[in-house]
Image (cartoon, rainbow, N blue to C red; front, top):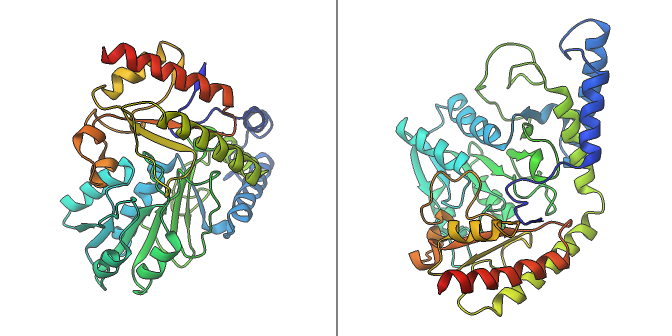
Length: 373
C-alpha cells in the first residue's frame, strides 16, 4: 500500500495510541468529580493542557479542547458573532477556506451578516491591499486559513494580522488545521486558532481552539462545568492526553522532518513535470506537503479509483468536500474548468519514501495511458 492522503488524515502514531490506552485503563475518574479518582484525572488533564500551551506559546486557560477542527471553527465563528453581536455585522474570509468555515459563513449570511471574500493574487495569496480596503470599524471578524487544504497555499498571517488589528474591535481567527506539525507557527498576532489532532498522527475526535484570554465567546454547547467554560461536557481525558502527546512528537525533530518532505515534494514535482498533459497547480507559496495537479480529460474520481486498484491512495479535493463539483480553491484562483474540474491532491509526509514517490509516478503514467485511450 502507498498512502498519499496525509492531508485528509494521518495514521495514529503507536506511542500516541499507547498513551490513549494507558489513560483509559489507569484514569477512570471524571476530571470534574471531587473524589480521589476525579482529582487524579483532573491533575493529568491540567498537565496535558499545560504541555499544549507551552508547545504553542500560549496560556493553559486559552486552550479549549473540542471534537476537532470543524467544531473549533464553528465555535470560533458563531461564538464570536454571538458574543459581540453589537460590534457589527461584517465578516471577511476567503474562498480558499475549508467547508467547515464556508458552510458556517453561509449560515451566518442567512442570519443577516454581510460577507466579503478577499480577492486573491495569481499565486493564491490574499491581496493585502484589497483586504486593507475591506476591513472597517464594523468588521467583527476576519477568518483566514493559514494553509489551504487543497493547494497548500501558505498565507502571510503576520501581515494579515497587522491589517486586521488596525481596528481593535476586529477579531482575527486562523484555521491552522493544515499547518500544525508541518510549518512553524506563532500565535502572537492571532486571536483564535483552530486545529485537529488527526492531522499530525493523533487520534480522531479531538481538536483545539486556542482563544486568547482577552477574547470572549458564546458557547455552542451549554451544560455546566468542564475542561473549559466555553465547551461543556465530560472532558475526553484519553483524547486530551493523546493530543498533547501527538503535538509534542510532531514538533520533535521538526526541521529534519520538514527537509525530508521538501526533498520528496521536489522529487515528485520534477517527475510529474516530465509527464505530458499534466498541469501542476501547486505554487511557490504552497507548503511542500501538498502537491496538487490536474489531468485534463480524466475525471478526478476515475483516476482516484484507478490508483486505488493498485493500492495507491490519493484524494480529489478535501475529504470534507460535499460533492464532485470543480475545486473551489482553484476556481477562486481563477483557473478554468479544464483545470479546476480535473484536479487531484497528493499529500505526503516524512513517513513517505522515495520508492513510494517513484512508484506513484510510474503508476500514474500507466493510468493516464489506460484512461485516455
